[in-house]
Figure (cartoon, rainbow, N blue to C red):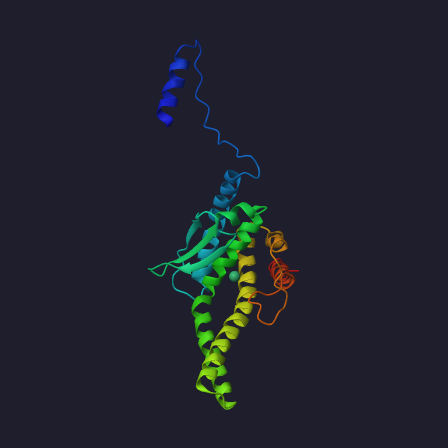
Length: 233
Ligand SMILES: [Zn+2]
């Protein structure tokens, strides 16, 4: 696409008396709030956050693979969401839906979410969550047997135990990922406290017993404390 344009410009300039060096190509500024502007911000955040997350993973991580693959989930109609998983080769994947990228109000929010998801991997949460769900099921099964329940009731208690264990541990994991994610975002040059503005637009899960996420106020407090600690006051 560029070649015909350059050829056309050369032809036009060729007719002028004086010739000027061609100006450097100007990046077209995307209108604020447009999907293009959101995409540009996202790419800037990836460029800054990914190397910091990988370095922290290599030096302090509980896992072996630290070569993150960052993907955009561009299936239409997906809600704002970010996730982390492993691909078939065991490489860590950080995924972001288009709606999340568009919904972010600034680069600090994207950097904090990216740091948070990377932190889940760095801290080895996937493997730990599975271990803890099994441990929770065993404990609940033993307690149910002690209470003289039928085999079906024991199984139901085991399922509930696994679920409660996984959810309560996932609250702990969320706070751990918030703290480590705040570190990553701060080192990468962003403001994680401003980044937690994201929580203001999420429904607060409150502190219900089975809530898998801690209350937003608790998450913000953890991030603020982490930043204060890192800045030494
Ligand atoms: Zn999380």
